[in-house]
Amino acid sequence: MSKTTNSKIAIEETPELSIPDTEGSGNIAALVRQMIVQLGEDPNREGLRRTPERFEKALRYLTSGYRQDPAKILNGAMFSVTYDEMVVVKDIEVYSLCEHHLLPFFGKCHVAYIPNKKVVGLSKIARLVNMYARRLQIQERLTSQIAQTLEDQLSPQGVGVIVEARHLCMVMRGVEKQNSAAMTSAMLGVFRESKQTRDEFLSLIRGGK
Ligand SMILES: [Zn+2]
Image (cartoon, rainbow, N blue to C red; front, side):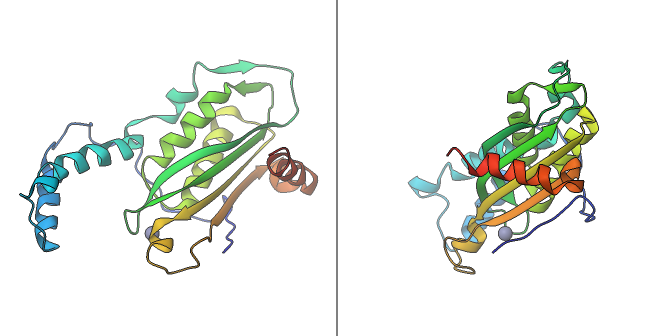
């Protein structure tokens, strides 16, 4: 399976700001306890007794990206340069939750940009990917949010983002072939306009593995 998206596709936005980490603490656990009952299980048996609290804690961590601000992640790590060659960060591990099934999808993200007098610390790019991945997501939106944020914050000559991921909602349910991965890409600026730039990006992420 292969899909391509670009920033021109209108994708429903996720809220930037949300409730603090601890608000309503315990509410999710109570719901999970009810869910376990609905599934016909006994929430009081030993293995399940603390599962609701564990699940809530895990879910709050996996959605902690709602409580982070992309500008804050990148600010303070931007530097002025004269460098104007492509910067590529490849094979960033991505773990996210599909918003349609609340099941994980995971894989790799590759990010490239061509600076326009400004670069950002490389580790911040991975943090930005994590921030958007730790929300309820669809792969298309995750991909375009990463690209658009770099575009907004760095005003580069162009930015390209590719995400390849396997979705447990597909592979565990046998909806698609078990090894299928979805690919999404967002190309802005010179990455959209120039095939040569896109090809350079692709050869840099495919080569040297
Ligand atoms: Zn799904």
